[in-house]
Amino acid sequence: MRSGCGWHLRRAFEHGKNNDIHSIGFMATPRNKRSFSQMFEGLRENLEQWVMARPMALYSSIKYKLEHLPQTNFDLGVTFASAGKLQDAIFRFKIALYLQPDFIRAQYNLGCCYLRLEKRALARQSFVQILKREPNHTEALFMLSAIDPASVSPAQRPTRMPPGMVEEFFNSLAPQYDELETANQYHGGRLCADGIKLLVGEKTGLRIVDLGCGTGLAVRGVRAMAEDITGIDVSPAMAHTARAIRVNDRALFDRVLEEDITKLTIGETVLGEADIILCCNTAQFVGDLQSLLALLGAKLKPGASVLLTIEPFNTPAGFGVNIDTGRFGHHPDALKKIAVASGLSVKNEARIHLYPGIPAQLFVFSKAAA
Image (cartoon, rainbow, N blue to C red; front, side):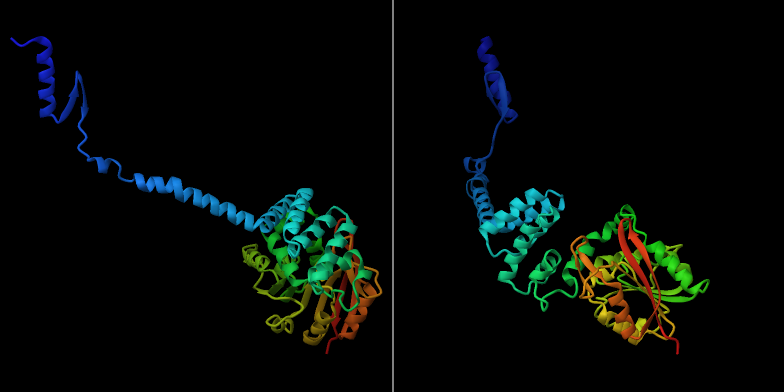
């Protein structure tokens, strides 16, 4: 007879052979048919990944950040400034300048942060530093003209807001522009609509050109009176937004042109057909209005009208940068002289408020009828 223990072991072993099972005692595990080399397949790749590739990637990342520390701190400064954390932004811009003293954008943004904190002396110092390196830096000249006009020579005083500054500003605002203007209690749309209705009465079929149209707030109230409305704006983002606006299931604008209103090319062709030119809440971003009014005087048909708003500013030069607003202001008397010299007559003028607490003035000029 078979002994109990030996029999059980032998039977277990025989059972294991028949079922490809390797048995030890009463426990069975699957037999691994892989060779020794197969068991370590991929080990080399894993070791290279952990021992070489990942440390090298980390090293490259650290090396890049060290080499680009000025830009890294500048980017952080922009992020902080956008969030209203001006002191944190100032700290980052200062680090960027310490690492790279000729970092002009960091110096400019530093000055803007100081200005927002009403530290005008420090802001002035930043803009002066820029002009020592780049005497014709348009944005620094513009800001310095606002802070301390006497420190900028007459030949260098800006006659307009730098186009890049205007375009960048309005591109950033375009997606939420209507909401912002509602929050700011902007009255321009209502005032323009009222002005046009007083000017033409019940007349319809108007052809209107809106200079610096933005999202079309100035013409929404008169869409029903207009046969054709052309918008012109320097900001691609604003123009894109304006094209999508509809009033009573009708496109607000028949066309929107992306042009600088002081250098019209395509826009010139629509001026000669217009009954009304609107330039509402735009002149303060232009500065010198002489070339624009001269163009309107030359191109408008007899009897056409111009509705234009300014922010009054008492300066012998006729216009200048207003430190309180950061925009151009215009002397009303100087503006009227320019209009008359351009072949336009002053039909009406009124003091208004486009925003609560910010005085403005509305002018109606007209081209003499033939």
